[in-house]
Length: 402
Ligand code: UDP
Image (tube, rainbow, N blue to C red):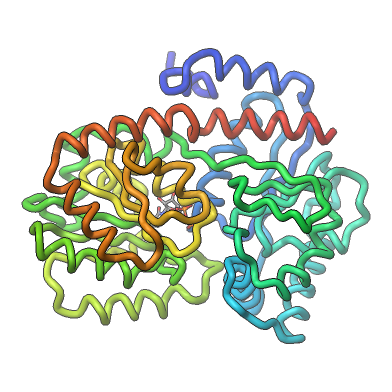
């Protein structure tokens, strides 16, 4: 009989970690946990919850997931907040704050939080203020997935009073701890699900069929960046790097990016990229959401790029490494946890397109080097960034909180 629960991960992480998960879950049986975020699709947070919530239930925690029903007015504000937390000097006007609070107040009134959960985990700034509108009788955790290394101070100060109401804050990297935040802060890096459509092992034939479906030939080595069309992911920089690389080694560039429902800037950024691509040869822009395509491309690519200017974690990096594809990425946020320079890929500073191109060319010219870094990358992800480790970290934190 096919196993159905967390034991399916034994093949990837071994029995000890799975046993540790069950042990950590034992004091938590029946605990009612609610996860709250703002999108069901698009972006890394939703992807992670799709795996984590069923696994929590499998090991005995009653985990539930609720979506803040935002509207465009909310997402205009929360994108501003996101940009400001990542360091852009954004100013919020009164109407912004009014919209932000109105949606959260309405949600707090009508959401299942009122039905009583033992622990509430709130993801990112969108639902952050809802805590303000409920009588607090249980632990709340703010799980911030954003790169908090250099927040724009006035906006950070505006959000802090909401954060202070929480019992714990969770960030993805030590680099995001805020010394000026008086709330206990835990570091839990994200993780990928090796059994999901994005990461499960594909046969050569499946990879070939997917690439054919999107008319992507395999006649030349493929460079790939998988990222929402978002300025923080520097898609125009990806084009610059591709042009430099192509002068030395003939290759193709594939950029896959869907638009998250809570990101109003996506269409405009995509339009800029499409204009820039214009008549450039061998560039494929794909906006469809297709997990198997992402999987097949990460498998087929010679090198994966992740040129983010800020990055909370960048699940796409671990996803590529898991498929033994080396990554050339910027040395920002959560990326250096995954790209160990010279071991699993190469790190460059944001905006250093010459440096990035040189590393890509080096990899394209040396299949053995690609193979070595790719294998080391997969081992690194297996040890640190697979779902059962994330589940274990959460169970341990929940046990501390209740
Ligand atoms: N993703 C996808 N299709 C796309 C773009 C992204 O399936 O067109 C997935 C990607 O594979 C990853 C997640 O969305 O699993 C993005 O997570 P990441 O942490 O890289 O970035 P975020 O979007 O959360 O900033």
